[in-house]
Image 1 (cartoon, one colour):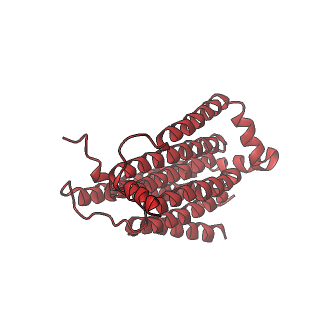
Image 2 (image 1 turned 45 degrees about the horizontal axis):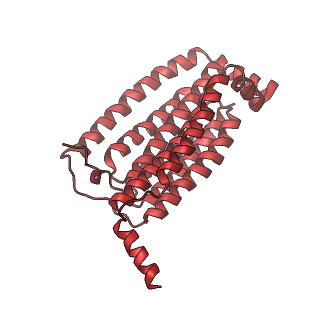
Image 3 (image 1 turned 90 degrees about the vertical axis):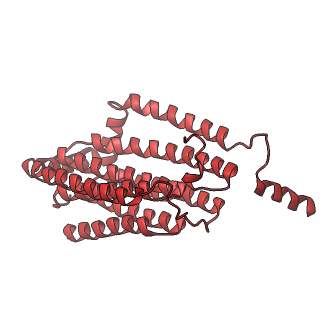
Length: 190
Length: 102
């Protein structure tokens, strides 16, 4: 049963990532990314990470991707990518090096296979943790004890991000761009 | 918990990460490049979850939590920068932002 689920997750996640690579439209890329993220959430569930799977769907596939789609819509959907190549040979080189990276990582994870079969008690230990205090509670205990300082730093990061975005997105004084000028002209005409 | 060997999950994470790297190098639209960066972060999250299972500890899952928070902050700031460049240049193409290139 779980092998079938894993095969489905594998096909869906890899297929949607590949489709991202070949999709022309930015909205399609975003939707394929959402599909891949939901598939990854199932992979998290398979491995006993229940809380993180829920957060993955709510925060990633929900909030962050909606933000992406919002910006894509704001900038205009019909943005075709330029086919002019400023760096000759970059595309084939990128694909070749990507294939090399795949080989490297596959080799490393094959070694990981040996490593994992050498220590099969990890799954059992995690299952015990998920059963006795529960996944969320065990995670919370760890987060608020051993990882308390990183947790606090995270809150500083979030405040800095909010302030930074407000500073960046604010409309500064200065010359208007072409579209802004036409917008103003339309307002005046109306 | 699944009987599927952790190595297969690691292979999936590695393949998705590589696709993210290639996409980042090949695509030209700034938002699309950004989405490939998110794909790479997702692949790394899967690797962390798999390591947590291999070692039978929850530290990997806590790290995924932090990666999620940083990814959210990074997405917001990055999209604001892209928006700002778009207002200035009327384009989301990364090749149009070449003022600092010699």
